[in-house]
Length: 443
Ligand SMILES: Nc1nc2c(ncn2[C@@H]2O[C@H](COP(=O)(O)OP(=O)(O)OP(=O)(O)O)[C@@H](O)[C@H]2O)c(=O)[nH]1
Ligand SMILES: [Mg+2]
Image (cartoon, rainbow, N blue to C red):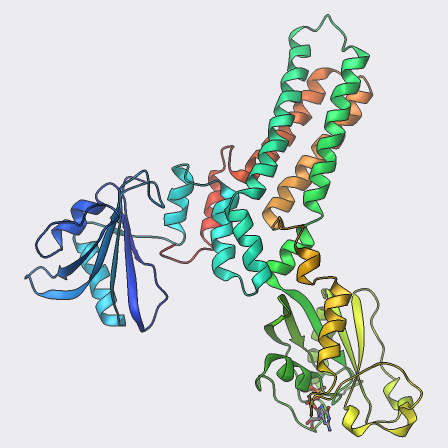
């Protein structure tokens, strides 16, 4: 932690500008040692400065700004140099800082330091990553709420109540000759039940959290040639998958995320399902079934250009939510005349407004509906909450059963630890490595 770290904070490649960031005790000193003139701008003021190589030749000229710890992103002294966005020039500036004594930063190390220095809790640190990777307006809003500390505060309120109850239980352990007054026991039980309800409420947002972060797993399913790849391409707005009149064109599954009215849909185009003697095609079909088993939504496509009897010959999977779609409305066979259904044409684009509405409605995922639940837990929070919930359930049972208060207190302590881990309050060395390794370098 005592090392001063450096990284390119802007995306790799060419751009108008690039940002190189330093953080640590020696950040100012290192910046001065490679800067022409050797005088830093005042903290939080921008100055035009040149970075020189060891012979005094200018590598790049740009804007330099300093932030004095603890009032900085990381809580340490921070220097940011905004230079020209070329690959070579940026790398040379980075190398120059390393020559002057800075260590290259690992993924997420700046944010990890911010957490270590108490600038944010763990849920906020995770929200930084969610914010960067948000692909829709809803995901962005949810990340911003979390960054603002909403989830952390909710968990802290749960923890505070739990701590009070645990302290109460432990007081009984200290005076073993006294039984728990039944009235007091009832009050404690009531508090624990309330906490259990709050935790259940948070756990219920896990699906929404996964969808915001990863998208609704939407599998496009049907017989060969019905227009599955055409649907993927049209929803994406470009030719991502090969489309051909030959049956069995798609072999591998193809995944792309589209933004449908603010909802991220992770569209998965699959191999058409039929009896096939071709080994590779059979493998593709097996993958299709695997995808269906993990889907949040299955779009079942049928082809209006073939006669109705033919089209019914497909096994429609059970389980996930599904939407029946009738494609090729421009070539509709007369046998479909009596059949109601959502008609689209991937050729002309007819019916796509209705299709989008139907998907949004099926998922109840329009922005208005999601507005109220802006906290959405991720898989790590979910695991902690599930542990907390089962400890609480045990504590409630042992309190009601009149067990030794020590047993109840033990379960409560476990619940406390689990809830504390969410915001990073307890000792969480190993989970930190796990979380921050998913970050990009420079953040
Ligand atoms: N007229 C018309 N043709 C369509 C429509 N949608 C797809 N097609 C055509 O149908 C054929 C099959 O389309 P694909 O999108 O490749 O079908 P697929 O379901 O992905 O087929 P596989 O990958 O073989 O399972 C192509 O020739 C498309 O141009 C449509 O709405 N109208
Ligand atoms: Mg296809």
